[in-house]
Image (cartoon, rainbow, N blue to C red; front, side, top):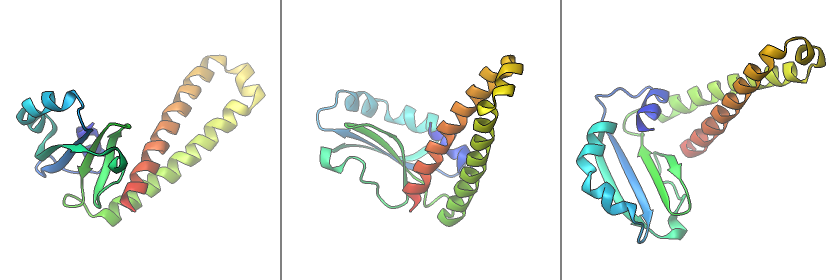
Length: 150
């Protein structure tokens, strides 16, 4: 996931990221990750890895310059990208990508809403539905990234 985020943010591998993995108190996975910290850093291209406890009222409070990569009610992964990229340029890129994807979604929804297309191109309908689901997931992720950058 961190490597995917690097790609989406155009962060080169030579830039070592700071990552914070935060667990609700007494999470059983914390010890395992702490034991394998060096391996995690190597595989993800992370320079600084913090494995921390967090109170439940602090979950989803994002520090400035961090993007929430994964989050649940007792676990989250934050990637600090502010030192690796120009945040304003990245926000513009994500906004442009989001606008493009929204237009793509509208196009797909229009196709799938066209009775003639659905009736005459049945072999393409499932493929278009799959594209629509992928685009919806992408827009959700981009909206989350943009929110984190604000």
